[in-house]
Image: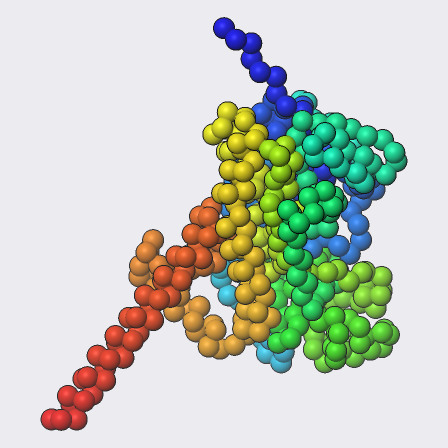
Length: 442
């Protein structure tokens, strides 16, 4: 009987959401895992101010957590949001449920709280060690060596970059591979800034069962509830021009803009000038690159491989699916990393492209359409079709947020549904025209 092959030593770069979850999965597979994070331990220092963007955790992310027994713990601190509460300018708020039953929900959770839960779980997993204050500065994919800002070095059999949209790992792979590695970062002409809507009289100032949206055509604000009764509000505004972050340079200008465009928020955000002045403007963009893996021993995962804009609430959910897929590939190949890594990329690339496309489209929907009467009518028709044709007609939102159907399959299915509806509508129009012509001839 041959001796059992020793498991590879894995280095994970990044201890954010993806890196924390990945460490849990790999540790459970019996790997020795060292996680290297550029920041100090956020469980000690707290989250970076103004850059959290509350997460909308949905079925894909919950499924990944469920597989390692963390779903119940995480969801205990989450708030279910069963639809959008749209705040039109000059009109009463209106609620638009996400599902035909009205009981399915996406879950609001703070990025910091989820990150801390994953770090605790990773640190408690045998074989996992987390090293904070270790910004990656050097990478030799062939030798498997990593160098850090403090001059220290490390070596591993497998190196996985889970260090986010601004991935240092990706940048070092680009420097190493040259023309053999492609990178494209497409920024929107929009940024984001966070504001806080505090609790009011010991409770929520807005309905905590909804994701609140203030659509204003070329811009918008959203707000997600927190367990302490507050809401995290996020402005998505143009970076330049009238009504942009750049054009509002004084507290008086900010107040005038809100009085004109978000009058109901003025009394809900008592520290509006302070939040607006102190919280930074974040970038919004899509990252595409390839290949995601090299030499069968170095790979990118999550936002490091395919960052998307946040308008479908799927960034973390998609990254968590990456982790699940990599775990599947390791299982399918018997932990053969040179076989598993290309298979992981093959299985995830089309899906990452699909959700990137859908996220950009959903920005236009949230910003421009949700307050439009025709859009609301279309949503009612869509829900009616779902009731009349259960399992046959399913909305894009339902498939993306409340199932684990691959994103690329969702995109194809929705296109087929729309084509079928267009054909039915055209046939109905022809039939109606024939009936009218027949009646006229009589």
